[in-house]
Image (tube, rainbow, N blue to C red; front, side, top):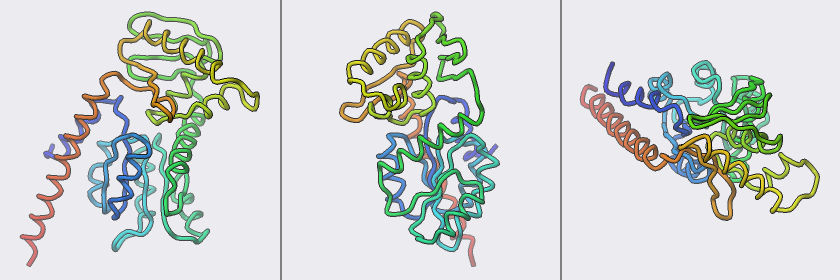
Length: 269
């Protein structure tokens, strides 16, 4: 296995890491997506290096630009769909044509977003597509780190214990797991749990309190974390060390790509 594959294989050894992938020749797009979602983003400017890495990656979401330098991003979508059946693939483009949307969906993408990108729209669309993919699988068991949630029997289990939860508490936790590390606003949570019924923030806070207490009793790693003024995110307490790992891998990937480009330049006549 070459050095690049070895680095990427290390991601497979950490299945709880949550990250996204962007294929876009504008580096600003990847930065915007990373800041918006609060997840590490691995950025690629052309299709070839992404295809080299695809089998070693398992991103939460993939964002693919249509118009690349000398390439069409749609050409790679079927290959990414085959490699990542549970990844939400979203095509992004400044093209105003409705044909672009049809072509993107026909190629296997889950959704389409037009440039300039709206942060709120990007976050909402990714979460919606992740939920759709989970719904398609109709799984009764959800897993997050060392945590297992049984939707049918309304139980939560971890290394320390197994507990029963109320229907809404299970729904809250399931929704946070299906968000796969993205931030969910409290308004979205209230709509998900109570529909059109008007409820106070205190009602949601009580459910959050009960879920947090249950998590502490069954797991030493899973944590329902508040992002002040934004919403909630379910994360692993070792998130800081995981972020360091992702940053290290990203830096090494960038270095390897530079070395490969320099080698190709020197070998050119």
